[in-house]
Image 1 (cartoon, rainbow, N blue to C red):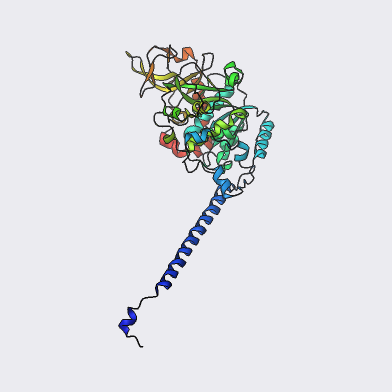
Image 2: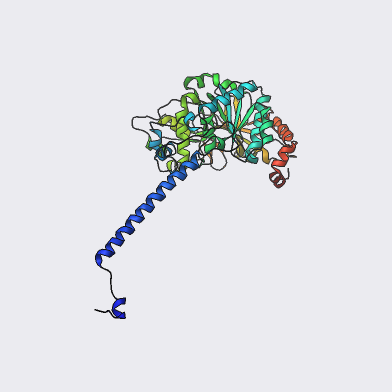
Length: 444
């Protein structure tokens, strides 16, 4: 039989042949999905295990399989719950995480020995870029001026410091470390650098200081004071009260009774035995990388501050909270009749009640004009009651039973040191060249 043209065009394939074609297409589709999955795993392994080409002390950290990669970096998808972090039975130790492993720490300690220091105890900072480098530099100068002989690690991100920064600070007993050379992944949260700097530090006992902190005296004695020796960890209070109704307390492991503090924590200064509490530091870092704002709803998510004492609580570890309340340092009264001040810094006390730190987190040294010689630290306002009273929102203005004193009468003229140190820094050609745009913008 001969088919006509019209009949040929309307002829359909046999149903069995059409079904076979569809089956082949499904198989090809699943093979394609499998290929893409394998390729993605290989790419992830390559990305997260590659070395920095210009790092001298680093050896390759090899991931055995994609499963190991997922285990080590399981916080990256940001899906774990707070409780799963605190109860993690297999936290990653610093030696397992850092590129190069224990050989890196041996190299760190050899470097300290070459400079005439020991790595048992030291100061850790996270500093870099225009704002924080200037503040960290004057803090280093004041530490040495006050007689502090502790070695100092200054951790920074790639591009934040140049070779001359590093050489200059080394003359003051500071070793600068590019954190991007030592981590096998990229940090997600802007505050994570301070926590991971403590975690990766070569020191066994750490005094951590924010870059914009300042010292009134040599703080070395903190390592030997009874308050630190009791639990080998020392935290400081913030202005604001913290009660047991904070949402983070709802996630505490079963059977753990938290040590409720009357105030939130201020983490611009901490003393920690890293050898004893490295797991807690790792958990704090994990929380920061796990979407902090979800795990700690407002108002308990200002940076990293409350993560420390609450994590110590949640993992059933003891700690000491300095009992003296935070004072406010101000340049002027905004309302004299109400004793209302506009604070530029926080005054933190030693366990014996003396002002020890002035955390200048509302006025950076690098932003201060070169011709501005008027003092910033004029008034010191402190609570006279350990628990009564609060803080006026937006002003850091202590209210309730308080007193206002002349800062220099109570603390001294150490602010003048910082002004002089900034003048020294501005005179350095490398500083002007590296930060030329920022300096021009501020007409310094």
